[in-house]
Amino acid sequence: MSAITEASGGQPRVGVALSAAVSEGPSHAYLLRGPSGSGKARIARAFAAEILASDSADPDETRRRALQNPSPHPDLIWLKPKGMSHAVDDVRERLIKVAPHSPFEGGHRVFVIEAADVLGEESQNAMLKTLEEPPEHAHLILLSADAESVLPTVVSRCQVIEFDALDDAAIAAELAEVAAPDEARAAARLSRGDLGRARLLVTERGQRIRAAVEKMMGATVSGNLADSPWLTVLNLAKESGEKAGERVQGELDSEKQEGIKHTKTEIDDAVRRETRRVRTGVLDLALSLAASWARDLAATAAGAQAVLFNADRVVVLEEQAGEVDLASARKAVVAVNDTRQRFQLNVNEELAMEALCFRLEKLLGPV
Image (cartoon, rainbow, N blue to C red):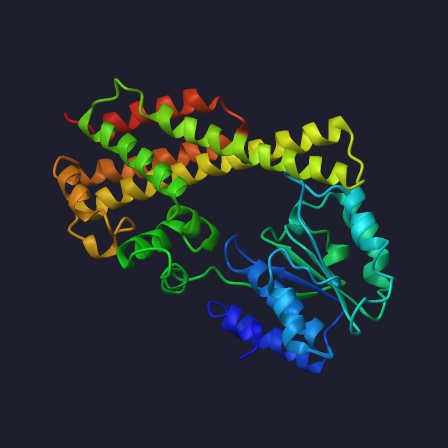
């Protein structure tokens, strides 16, 4: 079984297309495009491994090294954004200047650009010459979750491979080794096709986020908001953001020690962007979980437990739904999603969460 076939269990159509590309001779540029968490990075790594192994003197060893994350293979260059975007200097130094150089091993060199949708316009334009006149040995693989953010001039020079959102069964199967069956099924449904979110939900941090949201929603149903349960959710988001910022700070400090120059402003900006990205991501996840809980209250009130997102919380939902009106539960879903959309407008997060909880209390709480 090839690495591509093994990696693309949830995306069989993609696996067939990329396996054929290796057999026929890979093109110089690909854009793997689809929803977040649909397996693009894992399949890209497998695709890169098969390209590098295709003319290697020791294909198994080449494939083994290329599949490691991070990979020690000298001809696999993987670019990740620093914070919320790619630095144009990183694109120039690690892609544009390196691409013309001959491979260290075999006949191929592969460049993977993760989150190509956050490449700035300057970075994308800088790549055009490499895309237009690529060295024969160079192959670019761009990953994007946003169809509108990659410039048409870049897209037109790539073979586009479309990914679908993963279904619940595929995600649950991915989680089988790290979570109990009920927990894996619930995480799959709650992730809405995003494998990354599903994996987060079965970690200790993800379980804390989920528990905080469930406590918050339970407080709105019982009409007991005296402890301000939304603050626990906000604090978890803040904590997650700070840890992510510390990680980026450490990575950039390490690069400085290795001779890669970064100004203090560049480092501070990257840390601030990553801190905000992760914090807002956790808040978005929390609101998605809150909407799912309200939706499950409606489903439980209607006697439709078979379609619950929180399939491992049936007993708690049945206890809460006994006092909830079906129409009000549906309005609660709308209220949560309205707040989720408002968060994209840089509203005051604490005030927005507080207002949401009191609105949900009116809808779901005791009469």
